[in-house]
Length: 129
Ligand SMILES: [Zn+2]
Image 1 (cartoon, rainbow, N blue to C red):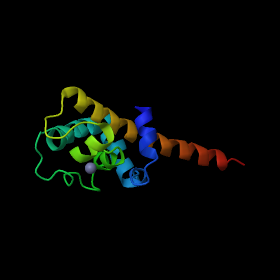
Image 2 (image 1 turned 135 degrees about the horizontal axis):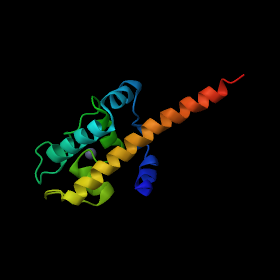
Image 3 (image 1 turned 30 degrees about the vertical axis):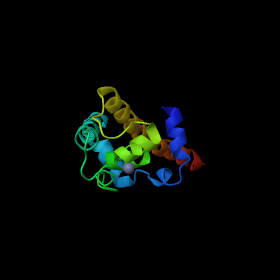
């Protein structure tokens, strides 16, 4: 998992995506469990079917932290899933593959939330007299 996240961090396109304050607040307000169930829902409805009419365009660039996470982790569409994760198109995602995608999305979100926490701690230390 960390390997994949490291590989994604090297892509200038993928690493452009970050959780902004509004999205981080949303994650905090909803709680991790709720966000995870949203991720599950999106993956099931927008990514799992064998045939997706608007594949490549089904994941908005903004609006929900999970959408941002999907672009950052190349789990936004079946084309990206194939290119980055070797999961072929044209068939239903297995339960195992769905779990993998959800885990990847949540790991990325965890990383974003942790990064902000680290920065805050760092800033506080910086402000010490
Ligand atoms: Zn994509």
